[in-house]
Amino acid sequence: MSSLFNLSGRTALVTGSARGLGFSYAEGLAQAGASVILNDLREEVLKESVKKLQDKGFKAKGLVFDVSKEEAVNAAFEQLDAEGIKVDILINNAGIQFRKPMVDLDLADWQRVIDINLTSAFIVSKAAAKRMTAGGKGGKIINIGSLTSEAARATVAPYTAAKGGIKMLTRAMSAEWAQFNIQANAIGPGYILTDMNEALIQNVEFDAWVKSSNPSQRWGKPDELIGTAVYLSSDASNYINGQIIYVDGGWLAVL
Picture 1 (cartoon, one colour):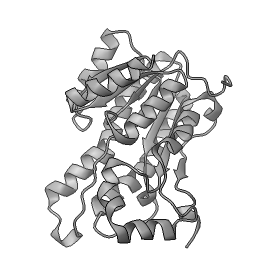
Picture 2 (cartoon, one colour):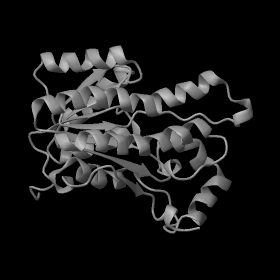
Picture 3 (cartoon, rainbow, N blue to C red):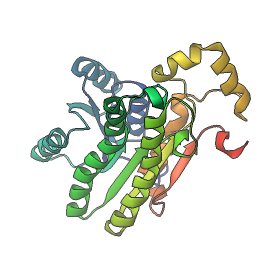
Picture 4 (tube, helix red, strand yellow):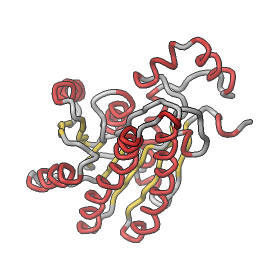
């Protein structure tokens, strides 16, 4: 592997990574040489996912904490400090979806989506950046956006607001932290074949719309996001900052 993309000797924390795209990111970074820390609230599921990586010979551990609670995040990083573990790469992947027309949307449901999809990225990144700057080496922060960082769809207003916020939060991170050799960027996945999208995948009308609207005429696969994650985690992206890269099959390029 080219040294530009080699992550050996680095430690990556991926939030919301017991399953789905988060697990794919973690496995991809492990394949590139990184030690990975998986995070989730589901302890048993997390243990299973960590074991899957360990059984493949990768360095992996699990860390259970709620990314939307600052006290829990700080406690998790203090635990890593005590173990002598420095996070070099952070992927803010944790997220949820909630579909309902805005006129019927309760404030509590709005807030829950904002907290988990947007505020958590601020909380976890703040804890990581404090340590990246104090260590003097810098680091990589990768936020996970969406097509809805650019375009809206009906019934997902809080998700759209959160992912639009992720784009601008990423730029704010760059504005403040680039001077400390921290590169903060984002990935905007298109429609990907994941458990979270299972209901949409099984909807014949929606599936046909995805395939007809996308220039690639298909859904994306989880492993097709790995290359971008590795790139943004590696020395190959050392002068890339404040950007969001859409991995969408060309979706946003057409009308």
